[in-house]
Length: 71
Length: 186
Image (cartoon, chains in turn yellow, purple):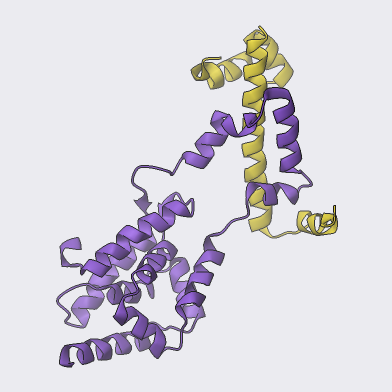
């Protein structure tokens, strides 16, 4: 990876515009991955309780968030 | 208020909404309004810029710089995360395009793709000030040039961009007044 140093430099940057944008994108990625994994778990017959335990959140939280998705 | 706008001024506001949308903004801001004004190639606005030795392309570049955030891939790269690699892994497990098909992704990308965008307070103020500028100059209608004057003291990114290119309110007012007089006389 030719621009590894460039990336490292950016990561250590204290410019809020860069740091906050990275956090926002990371949150977006997190949401997408969680949705895929929760959907897959439901497809494989996992209970909300099992999913919640694996995600380390309450059953209510995960159920409330994904109920509307029809999982 | 809009009934006193010239065609170009109206088109500038319409174009501002398009500018905000295509730039993925959640509201119409002053920089979008400025881009909308520049979109019209209004002869009076262009004359004001020329009179102050400002290039339209430079302003457009400034607007791009002010509105362009990093892409997700670029932003994640600063944390050492290779989004393409993540996408490859996810596609392997869940099928091609799985990551981009999630509701989370679609909501984030498509949130502003339809419906009316609100106009933020500075852009609203710029439009109100454009009316005042027209009244001040005793012009019967609000043209794109008056929006430009409004943008010069409404705050927001457009003011910063214009002032950064050395367009100042008082001087611009004098120029607009002179050009409008010439146009009427001519």
